[in-house]
Amino acid sequence: MRRMRMIFLGALLACLLAAPAHATQLTDAMLKEVSLPVLFGGDTFTVEDTEFHRILIPAYVRERYAQGTGPVEGVVDPLVEQVKKTLNSDEIYPKNEFVTYTQVRHEVVSYFDSHLALFLKTVYTFCGMEDKTPCLDELTLFILDQLPALTPQMRNDIEVLYKYNMTIGGTQGTIARDGAADGLYYFAQTDPDWAELIFEFEGNGATLKDRGCGCACAAMVFSTYHKVEITPKWMRTYALAGDWPVSYGLPNEYFQGIARQYTYLETERYGTVLNDPTIVPKAQLDMEQLARQIGEEGYMAIIHVVAGAFTGQEHYMVLADYEEIDGVGYFLVADPYIQPSRYRNTDQMRDVPGDNQGLVYAASSLLYRDCKSVILFSQDRNDFPLSCKTERAERVDRLAE
Image (cartoon, rainbow, N blue to C red):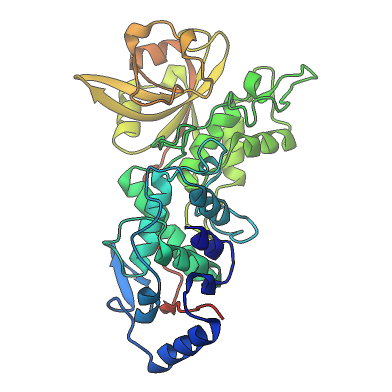
C-alpha cells in the first residue's frame, strides 16, 4: 500500500507499474489508440426522477489498477488519514464537503468511518460500480486522484447525491470522537475544540463552555437543514459580530436573526433553504402538537429552559426527534452541555443507545415544566432536493506520463 499512498499524494502513478517507463508510455498510447470501450453501461443514471451523468472509466483503466485490496470500513490505517485530509482540503476542494471537520479530528482521522464508506459508494455509483464494496484499493485511489480534474459541476453532483444518500438513509450528521456516526448533527459547547473560546457579556470573562449553548444549538439546527457541518465557532463569530450576547448567553431573537441572514446559505450548492423560525412562549405551547410536528412532520425546535431537571440556570437544547418507546412518547433531546450527572428526575428520562452523552430521551411533561419558550423551525429536516448541474458524462482516463 506504500505505492498507493504515493498515488493519492500526487506521486507518479507509474511507480505502481513493474514495466519500464518507456514501455509503459507505449502501452498507454496503444491502449488509447485502440479506444477500448467504456466499462459500465450508459452515460446516465437516474435517482428519484433526477438524471445524473456518469464518470466514464475506460476498460483499460480498470484492467491497469488492482481492485479489492486495501483498507475497508471499520479499520484504522495511515492511508485513511491521507485520504480524509486530502478530501477535506479547502485548497483542493474549496466548494465541496466530501469529508467533514468531525471526520478529521485527531481521534478519528485514521479511522475508516461510515461516512467515508458512503461517500465512496456514491462515487462508485457515478462510475457505474454500484455493487463494489467501499475500500481504498488501487482503482478507488485512482478515481479519487481524478476528482480535482472533474468539472465543478460534476463534483457538485457527487456531493449532492452523497448528502441525499445520507439524508434518506438516516446517516447524516457528525462523527463522534469514538468514530461512530451520531445519526444527527451534534455539537457540544463543552467540546475542547472550542470550549475555552471567550464568549463574554460586559466583561464577565465567560467562555463558550459557560454560555455557548445557543451557539451550539444553532450549529446543530443550521447543519441539519443545510447538510454541512457548521460548528459553534462559526455561530460564535456571527453572535459577536451582531452584538447578540446577553447575560445568560443569547436571546431567542438571535435564532431568527441568523436564520434571516443565512436563509440561503447553501442554496447555490444544494438548493437548501432555512426558513425563519417562530418563537412560541410557554403559554401558547401545545406539547402534543409539538410532538407531531417533530416526530411526523420532521420539524426541529430549540427549547429554552429554566433551572430544573437539565440545568441550574437558563439553557438551550435541541428537540431533534420524537419517538415512542415501550408505548411511551419521548422527545430526543440534544443537550449541548455534556454532564449527564447533573440530570435529576431520571424517572422521566431514558438513556439513548450509543456513546453520545449529550443525547437523552425526555418526557413531554418534564420538558413543559421547565420550558420558558420554544424556537420552532417549521420545515422538514429530512427534505433534501436532488439536482444535476452537469450536461454530459465526463471521461476519466489520465494515466501516468
